[in-house]
Length: 375
Ligand SMILES: NC(=O)C1=CN([C@@H]2O[C@H](COP(=O)(O)OP(=O)(O)OC[C@H]3O[C@@H](n4cnc5c(N)ncnc54)[C@H](O)[C@@H]3O)[C@@H](O)[C@H]2O)C=CC1
Ligand SMILES: O=C(O)C(=O)CO
Image (cartoon, rainbow, N blue to C red; front, side, top):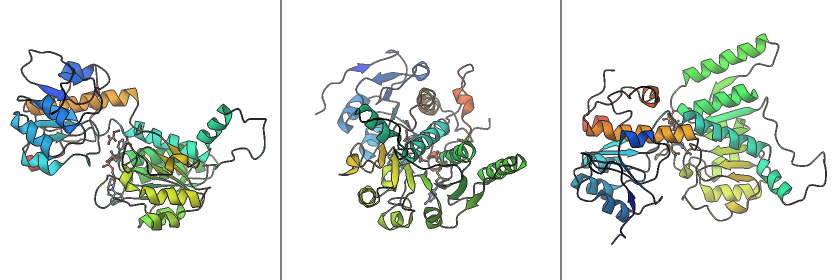
């Protein structure tokens, strides 16, 4: 039996009841909705008790059959993940109960790419190790060999999954550090290729070494050729343990591997062994196979930079995610159609004008036969 919860209630006499299972930043989403919960990580039982007998919609994460069933029993038809990735949501169960599932694409693209770039730099220049050294009072004076790392300029950046975030990261690394690009994705990223071509021409016209791009026909090609590899695919059956023991062994001994996608894309136990055996190999991780836990040994590895799933944690992005999640739920409750292009959600984020009368992004709209906005 779940314990009674302290719930913050906004607009207690409102017509609809929408629950947020996590406290979210900013106030715009509250103005668009609802009520929130102070405690941060709720159990399934807690959420079921919050849903109660009447609940029109919920904003949360990690939803399965029991929660969709409880929401449906309470009369609810709308759920929004406060995230773009929805591998943590059982969409088949949502379809079974007729519940729309929203996500928050686009608003976290640049913020997440910036964290991947930060981890790339931190790993390349050994920033965390050097910081610890300094704080430990070990610095005696400048030495030619102290924390020597890798120069990125002129090296090759490899991107696995060149979608919204992967492409943004690639552009940052190519333009910011003049790296050459090799990428692997199921689809061609024409815009990214055009960007690198144009930037290469610009550099050449200025008498500099031009940057280049290559679309790899296999992932292994990227692993063999790149000096820094960043993972940005969705997590599904095809990407589970995409980077395993065998694939790690194909990477350069001094390569840098970054993961800001989902933990299970890497076989984390194999990664720990690889880090132990190859001290010059470095990794930057935002996500872990069994979050919030790490595989034994990872925390002790000096050649790993590890942060707690903060890739989307900029104020603008987190407030925008909350806004999109709220609008997904609100739009479904009000019977609005689905926004036609989830890659262009800017009109929903403009604080100076009311949001369009549409749900920004519903991932199971086709399965539920929901109408698409003509706006
Ligand atoms: N660490 C964090 O806080 C965050 C993590 N993410 C993760 O990043 C993922 C990507 O987000 P977006 O770029 O917005 O999605 P997206 O859908 O634009 O890009 C994903 C790309 O992966 C590609 N892909 C799928 N299967 C593949 C495979 N087997 N091999 C190679 N490429 C494959 C797709 O074709 C697509 O281009 C999300 O699904 C989420 O899991 C997203 C935001 C923040
Ligand atoms: O949007 C996502 O998928 C996240 O992981 C949130 O940071």
